[in-house]
Image (cartoon, rainbow, N blue to C red; front, top):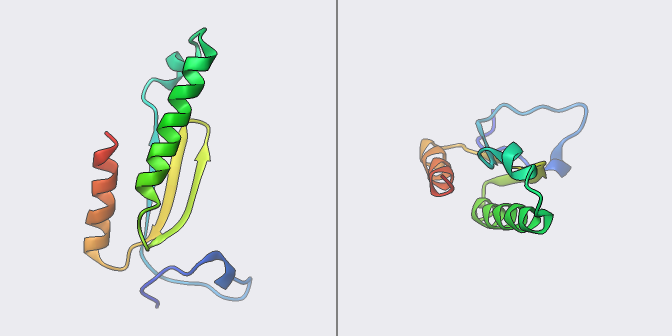
Length: 97
């Protein structure tokens, strides 16, 4: 068992890892209504602001392994070997609520 989840370049088809990870998924509440708005420029600005600010908050952690955008969702995957890592990551989600 390893304490930390490795970076992508450490994976092969012949190895595996057993460790704790934390995944965070943040999306815009009632985004369907937002996407239905006629003012597409306003919608684009809201989405861009949300995603760029969320990424800035989520990427500020040495345990980050992957970050991405899917629609109106920003996700991040972290290795979380210690309980305090999980608490720190939970704080990141609270700040976006």
